[in-house]
Image 1: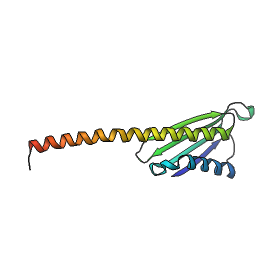
Image 2: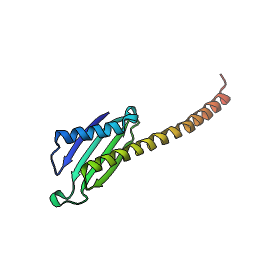
Image 3: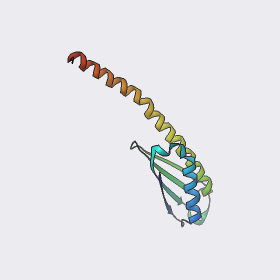
Image 4: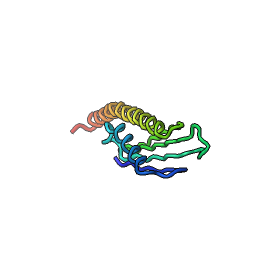
Length: 123
């Protein structure tokens, strides 16, 4: 699982990069085999004005090819990172559960179509 971090409106310090990578890696560790990459965009939308303006956008690319985007905005950047990581985990879990629920139906359809071809063209 590769994690890429980009910032806008402030510099990415090594400690911030380390904390952000650890938070997302630890939070999404359970789904590591299903995630190919995570792209994080950290942004200070209001600049020095203050307020609820620390935005984190996470784009998670699953090995299935599905892209998931989660955005969180808070006054504190570290809280925004934590909430975004937890929301990404929930969204990844739901997406994987949904794809697993669909698989049995696809299998049944394949079996039906296979049995139809067998009855038409017995071997």
